[in-house]
Amino acid sequence: MKFLQKFKFAEKIRNFSVSPDGGKYAIKVFLLFLCAFLAGHLTAMITGHYKTVETASEGSWGLSFQQEGQPPVANATMDYLRQFDAFYAAKTPEKILYLTFDAGYENGNTAPILDALKKHNATAAFFVVGNYIETSPELVKRMVDEGHTVGNHTFHHPDMSKISSKEAFEKELKDLETLFEQTTGKPMKKYYRPPQGKYSETNLQMAKDMGYKTFFWSLAYVDWYVDKQPSKEDAFKKLIGRIHPGAIVLLHSTSRTNAQVLDELLTKWEEMGYQFKSLDDLVTAP
Image (cartoon, rainbow, N blue to C red; front, side):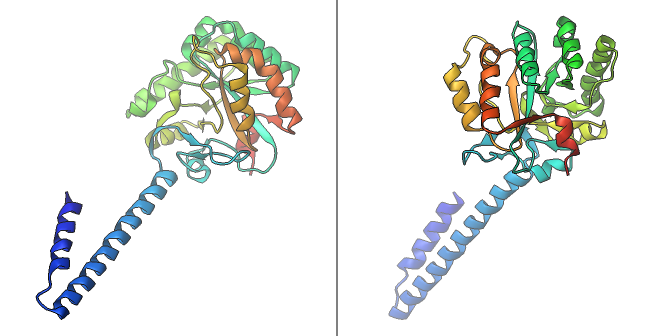
């Protein structure tokens, strides 16, 4: 509406022609107005874009892949996240990647995933919820025994971006810590992944205040619909075509496709020159 009003005003000026000099004056005024209007909108667009990329204080984690073999553009930059001890990839030219799995429940696919990791001597991080530890304690113990990291995916898997209370936020993480220690006899690593990638700046700070590192991801694909699993071809197209140095890869342990292709996928990444590192290596890197 404001734009329409400004346009009508400019149109009146343009039509003003009581004299040749008046007409020239009106045209000059109109052109100056138009330049100022366009400059203001362009500035607003540019400022708004960079604000979104640099701060991205809340929402759902998102990625935009723009160049094969290069890290995607994410909701927030690596430098912005670093102030909260948060990561989505490593800033490195080296062909290294970090394998992570989100484990909401067990449906028979975790064991073959662990078998493939063991075959390739690859360590991974499994972000688990309360239900997973309660129903599959032996698999959680196996993860620990085989050198994998078990991280905190919250007890109930809620939308943490909607939790503003410090007490409620801490309870979701601490209840899982307690269950993990009761099950394994070991303290839980303070590595956290927000359920569904939903977060706020307040959440990131709360996690940091608890001593946690927060991990998003720079490579994932739609593998979580149990009744609509991707084909091997679809999985390889995304996971091989979009791999990049320093990638944090997110896969779901409920995926039948992941269990079936992981051995071959790891082989292909190795053939491309990639090495598998742990999140410990990422957080201690300069």
